Image 1 (cartoon, rainbow, N blue to C red):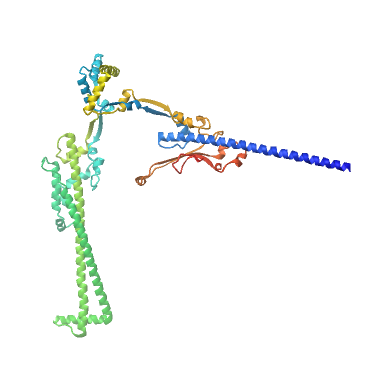
Image 2 (cartoon, one colour):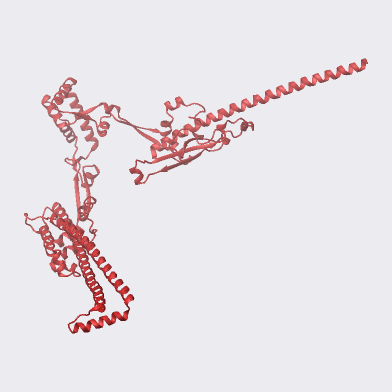
Length: 577
């Protein structure tokens, strides 16, 4: 019995120890697992924050790339090359913007000279000093004048000055001008030289039609206009308004003729209906009384008619019926034939009038073309040209140089620019020494009271006075300036690995696209659209972490992380920015 009790106690003790061991193992195992999961989540959060900051950095580079190039980059290497190899020029013009200069320098100098009569003229003094130091002046060549922006020289063929884009918009487009030969203008001009040649265009029409459309009057009108171009009589000039009136009148006549054709066609259609009606009646009547009877009645009536008598009785009635049917058919057949002739005649007149309108349009345009050609010739040569052939040859072949004066001046330059610069600086210094601030205030007041105004300095004047400064900065310093870096958080800025996902050797994915509206879309207010997207998957973001990271991911971390979009013109990130 004591032995049994001892064994029972041992058993209880062993079980108690085992339970304590199990509880301790479970506690420390669970604690270790929770501690590891917390650590992994913290690392995941750090990775995510680092990627968000890097995507923000890349976004800034993309935005500056577009500002400089007009579009986004779809290539990581291109973006890196831009970052390390691009410089941006900045112009500081704050001081120049605060300064001003007299709009009317002649008035300013006049007031200045009146108030300070012993004042040195800076330009005259500069020339004196320059000459005293052995400086000389050289007249600019034409090429030098062009290079310095004093003049502009353009070379043209005469027809380029005549048939300009602006003038071509005013032409009636009855024909296209062959500027290399002016063949079409020459053909039209030659055909109006005589009425017989002009009339040959209407050989397919009869004299009645030609007289109806008054071709001779139109020819006389056209010919008079052509003659007025090349005569030296100042009292004559081209008058094409009456030709336009002829066109309008012919268009009205054509409308009237078309209306007549429509009425005549209706009349013809009615007559054809009467013919069909008479034919059907005869057919029905013949079927009723028989063809033999009809033939006998016609024969009998003929015999009676030869004797001066008429059929009576039933046969007389039959003959009267078929005679009326014959009469209806014959009368309406004549009407149909007359209508067809009338329609043909009306259509013929319409064709003639349409041809006349085309011919007037073509001749009117040639009259205007020749007038412009002649005016251009007179402008360049300051003399009249009264010969058609000469004018055409000139327009086709003559080379013309147009010199436009852009800046007036003596067109001379100093042989020794450095000496001239020193002379001007010395002269300006002498003028400055001659005027004190009080006198400058008086000159300014007088200038304003006389209606004078001041204007902002030009860029050239700003540079000359040393008030505009140009400096160049690397684009990376422009993007990541002090303001941006002050608000930047997370990982340190490492531009060498900017396109790589932190803690990995994997690059982000870069893509970009453009959408340009067509003309119709532009008219509706559509504009050019530019898109970019820089992205990667969260698998890449959390690459290399323990397997627990997959279980610890939030719903938003199942897909990918990106900044920008290819569907919308946005630049924010998809992490809830």
